[in-house]
Length: 449
Image: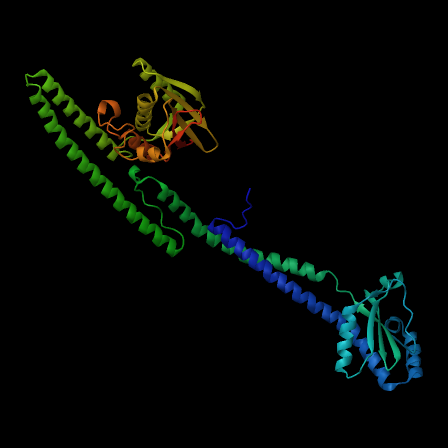
């Protein structure tokens, strides 16, 4: 399973981008503050140590330095913290002393600025003692050893503790920034995304349903302008479809009238063979005209969507076909209810069943339900179809057999009508070969909650 880090929604992307930016900014801020705090700590302890060393080097008086230290020893903690010892040999350090290279580098830089050349500079952190840990001046005891002109100058100093107030401060600062920035951004994004979601749902709806109810124009001005343009566009589409239906109705009426008149006249022909052929041609033209009008008007009409129980619907269909002595049966049917126009859905399934009987010997009906949709499957036992044939048969006037005899193949509009009806109900129609042979025609519809 692929882990998706970048959100797909507008609100998610805005929140993620802002949160990531704030996190990076606070991380940089934290690094700079920690660095500044460390520099301040080093300046507090290392600066005093350098001052003592430079002063002793300039005076060059060991005894005076020792006397000053003895004087300082009589003044409590300050004397214990700032002690200077000058000797010809390196000082002896406790075994648990830890090197502090950062402090050594800092002291070296200060002494270089003071123009005091040191052969070597080392800094060590001494192990903590309980007596100092209880002091009101928490921190770390360090020893700075500088070798100048062959003599060792050792200064014991105290580095103040950085404490843990800085991380707590940054955490509260980050949370405050998130609260002050993310809440308005979330509100603005939600205000823009909500009408966009409504617009997306309306765009996905089939225009043949003729739901021209305008969407509410809300949100930012850009979103309102987009919704207004969509409402005008959908109104124009609805008007065009209405004009098309009116035109088709007129054409159907104008064609059926002369066909009916022609049939009346044909029935007066005395030659039975010629009369029967002409009547068959007229009936074929009438049936083809009916199919063409049905395809053109698929999704339109005044029928209202209502909950349809598929188990009952399939049972009625199978009973009708069995009365006609046709091999139609019901397999596994999951209990499911869909929102659809029952007459149109029945017509779509009839077209699929008729195809299964005509090309696949028999038809078996089943219903498979999952979490979000329900699939009505019409299976046959025919030879199946190639991928190119499946794509071609979904187009109008495509037939499963090459002859143009209506008695063996119809006008080639059954699948097209079924597909248009399925899509007008918010679903799909697909054809697929079964591994064991035969073809499955699957009508997938949204599940009624």
